[in-house]
Image 1 (cartoon, rainbow, N blue to C red):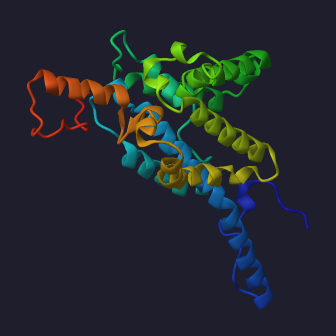
Image 2: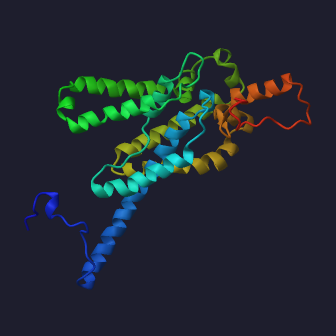
Image 3: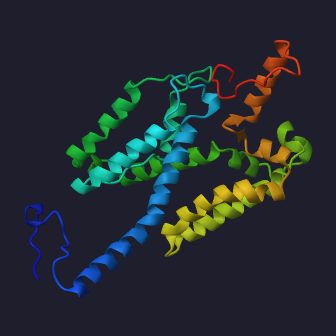
Length: 276
């Protein structure tokens, strides 16, 4: 049958449970299959949004206006629950563009110049190619590919994994002091193995399930890694414990000692941004 073109002839509800029992079974089967396929995509959006939020709110950035972990997930849930019903695409935090924008707003003292103007201007500019698609057509494809390539490469070299990867073959005495007494090489090789596994799954017909592998890394970190590495090594190699980087924790401890804190004094509150 010919399907009329245009939204004016399309009903809001595609299926109706009125009819034979076989039709109802087909509808339930289709809905169940769709929910099964949507499950890994939902995991992917959840992890992508949380990773973006974490990288944009690292303790060393010394943000003053608080955190937005829960509120950002709530807003994304509202957008993705309502907007697609009206033909809008799904949205989530972007990697590595979101952390790159935060670093671009960092001053010479390492603090982020927190404002609403820069994000507002960036998002307002996104409306231009939507309203005037010919703008994108006038940009050479090589320029777009170069922009995306630069964004990806810059996002890679800014990670701690890349720094440790470049030091895999370096003599031990040339390593940074914090990594000399740790199982840095074993930990880095394990990370590279996991990365290669995710990449292979991503390019395979089962690419949607790579998000499940990423989610499974959380219990793997909690239960498996402590059996493979010492707690002292994980404290350094993870770079963050309870949201506090190793250097910040050591700085906070040094500040407490400088103030004459005794052994019986309570430890500094690492959730306090003033301490960091």
